[in-house]
Image (tube, rainbow, N blue to C red):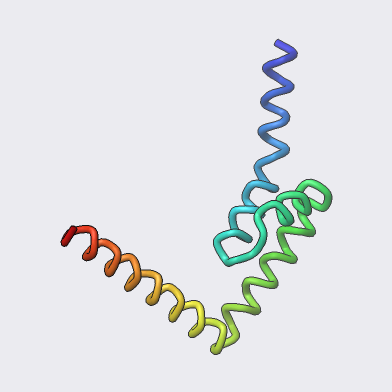
Length: 87
């Protein structure tokens, strides 16, 4: 019973750091840095990351750069698939 409560507690405590790390990673930031910050400063790190992402999304140049990178990644993936199909 104690082990079950301990495991449930660890999972509950790690939800916010995992969420913070995943959000950071999906926007090109270090997962492990933000995961650690999520453990040290759980609520504060989440709001700081949210502010950084919001600032990046509101910057028109950064948003265009992010869109261009995703378009190039899709084109490279399509080219790679085309080459594999011809081999």
